[in-house]
Image 1 (cartoon, helix red, strand yellow):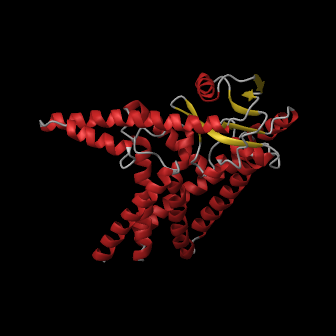
Image 2 (cartoon, rainbow, N blue to C red; image 1 turned 45 degrees about the horizontal axis):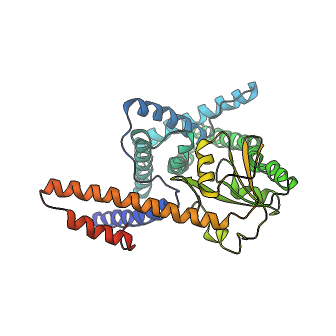
Image 3 (cartoon, one colour; image 1 turned 135 degrees about the vertical axis):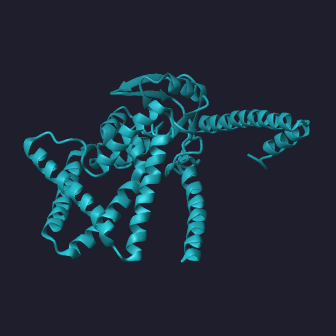
Length: 358
């Protein structure tokens, strides 16, 4: 059993590191610039953890009507009762080793990710709750496993609490779906209305922010009659956003006609940073329009060639910055060891310039 567990831990660790590396490249998990949070931030993270867990379990947002409060109270009592009885039944003797391991793993998984959520400096808002997804799944695994054990006991109280919990969760889950109109309609955050406005102004091809302008969604929401490619503002330049499900073909020569008469850039206002990036990459616009919370800057020429040049400028600037930072790091290592690091700096700089190192 010991050998099996050791092998399982090693395989899980190696597989996890490979999977994390791939997901990190896609910006789907936190990067490695994570450190410990300050004590005040940890208290804030505790509040976020409680609110995030409540959202996952459909306890939050709180009800607004009298009947909803009654159902919410029954659901709360049912879940708390199920959890309490599950802990009691576990102590009284779940003898199946597989069930014990499953419950222990669920508790350990929830504990580790919750501790990381509170102690690190990553969680800056409620958006970070998406990284608590294993808390949600492991809680369900633990409750279903305990629930199956309780159901077999045949006691009426245990069965009643389980049924109340299940029915309550389904009711509030359906209620959450019903109220989340922004997610389940074509006009997600006003994207369809923005697309209609762009078409009405004879604007069919452009670039926009991935999140604030919902660039990938605009075309979809208007039957692909309009194309808005997602871009990022980084180090003073507008560059293609080639992560988070975006692909290089969105910015290929075929997809970016060079003879386009008019193109546009859409970004949220006010945003001095995006204004500087846009002017730095594409020059001053021919027209500055606004619609709702967005700026729409119109250019009477194609932007694809300038976007390609901006991307090259960004890469060169990033490479110079990276070389400077690495030279500083090599110097510190040399000073610590008491040796000259000039040769190492020159060698590493050459490797960086030739693309052999990062």
